[in-house]
Structures are given as structure tokens and as C-alpha cells.
Length: 243
Ligand code: C5P
Image 1 (cartoon, rainbow, N blue to C red):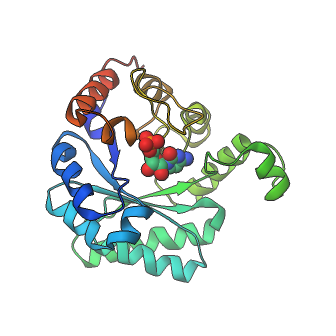
Image 2: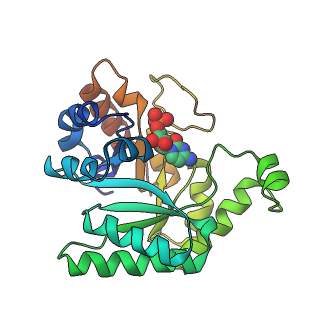
Image 3: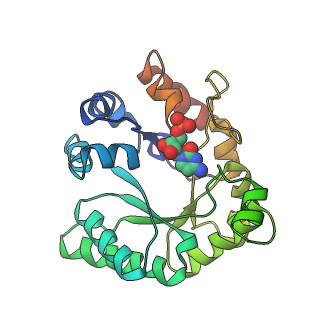
């Protein structure tokens, strides 16, 4: 098993850069990546990514791009030049859009002398219910079936993996193979508050289900001692039984 610490991503969900950087300084060296999401990016701009990188941390930009392929390609090239280690696009944007993001990111990173970022697809956001997927979006079947189908599409488009709920990981692994990365949010250690997550799993369950990267926000960022929370999560990940 890869070093559990490298597989933990902490979400810097803050409205301003100073607060995000305070947390980044505290836990950045103890985890694999720090996640810059839409809240921080749209408050502080690209300099949020650069400032977190300057601390020596790797950045997952949770960009959730979705637009025409040409526009997404331009955005993908821009974030690759910022030096993000991972970013994502909506798989519902289609395979041409996903492939355009993949190609543009790889080319821009190479031109800038940077490693190609990991490009991940967002399948069905876990906030959508089965009824919403069927009745509002008009997609037959349930959210889970749609998520699996979109994971296959993301793989075929050349993406490195997908974001998924822990409960979907074994099936995605089965159909997309063991090299395909699965990034799972909705992680709640037994000692943490559930907050607004409804389909959550413990760090141990996530690793045992086959997750490659665990995204954790409030159980760390709102903990009395965030560093101790990170240590406890990494210890729990390491205790998971994998075959
Ligand atoms: O605080 P918490 O651990 O719930 O944070 C989870 C992080 O993962 C947040 O940044 C949230 O935006 C993100 N996320 C999620 N569920 C998804 C996709 C992303 O909670 N389906």
C-alpha cells in the first residue's frame, strides 16, 4: 500500500487566503495534497494556488470545469501552467470535452517544464438524488448507474480517474481497472461530526473499498487540533486491510 499520508487530501474550504494559508502551513507537510475549491479560488484567484504551492504543498484544484471543448481546453492549459497536481472536469460535459482537457493540460505542463497534472472526472455530484437525476436531468436509471457509466466514459476519454462516493468504488474498480484513480470525499472518522454529508464512510472503509485519495475537509479544518486529526486519520488509513 502506498504511504497513507500521500493519499490524504485536505480541503481548504475558506473564503479568504490568510485563513487557508494558516491551515496549509499547519497540515501541508503531513498530507499528500491540499484542495483549493471554487470558494477559495473565486475569492482569492489563481494566487491561492501559487501561494499554497510556495509552501511546498501539492495542489488539487477542484475546478469542476464544464463548457465547450475549446473553452475547457484553454482553462485546463491555464491551470496546468499554475502547477496544479490534479484538477477535475464534469464527465457530463462529454468525452470530446474531457479529451480536450487532458490533451491541453499535458501539452501546457510540458511546455512549462512541469509534470502533467492528474485529470479527474466528476461523475454525478453526490448532492443529486436518484429522483433529480431521473426527473430533472432526464437520465434513465439511478445516480449510481449513471456514475459508473460516466466513469467508463472518463476512462475512455483518457482521464486518470474520477471523483466518487466510497460506496461506488468497488464497482468502478471492477469496470475501470486497478490503475484508474478514484478520489473519494464524504469521509467521516467515527469521532467526527457528520455535518451535511449524507453518504459518508470512515477513512478505513474508504481504503478498504479501494479509494486512492481521500478528501477530508471539516473533520480536520474544524477540529480543535487539526494536526492531531490528520495524524488520527492517517493512522486509521494505515490500519485498513487491503489485499
Ligand atoms: O468538510 P467535508 O469533509 O465534508 O469536505 C468535503 C470536500 O469535498 C468539500 O470541499 C466538498 O466540496 C468536496 N466534495 C464533496 N462531495 C462531492 C464532491 C466534492 O463533499 N461529491
